[in-house]
Image (cartoon, rainbow, N blue to C red; front, side, top):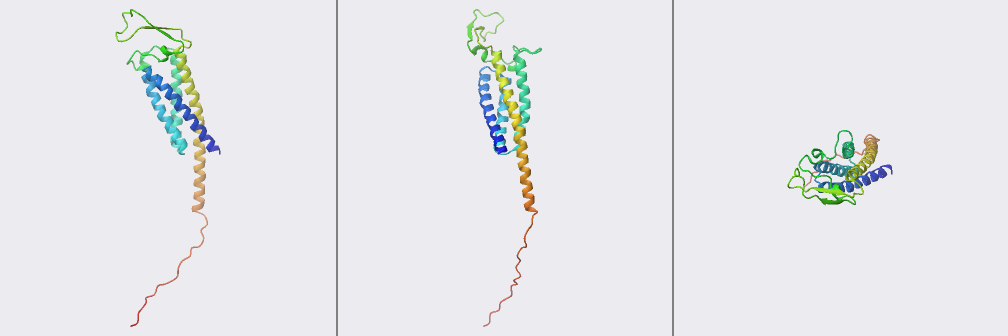
Length: 208
């Protein structure tokens, strides 16, 4: 019962993680955030493997999923610090999120709740010709706080997943040990005497 309950809970957590990260991946694609896109893709694979290991009693897969969650928590804590500009970090840095390929920002910057986008004409002389220069106002929630809330949700789910992954690995290992003990007892247990045949075949001669 404990193993079933732990596995079901972990499978549920993996399902919530998949739904939330797929939603996040869509908005990262819309914002051309290449670093989060690649990290999200690895996370999706790790969660799928963790879910498979949970359902199929594969402790190695669940262990790998738990190890990845440590890296995932570290990444999301960095994202939180990045958007809150902790220390020397700046949310306007292009290199970290877009690998300096584009000048795009988070999709939520222009499409957040209540945001009004106003094109600025004429654009300043330093603005690239293939980019528009806009003014954003009236946002009920600034885009950096939307990104922070998404990362905070991922941290909470990852911590819950890590705890239950360790619990499930422990339960599966205990079940495997108990099965090995039963199998060893059967293989070295008492064996009854076997019947052996003492019938000896004799040649048969036919008389004419």
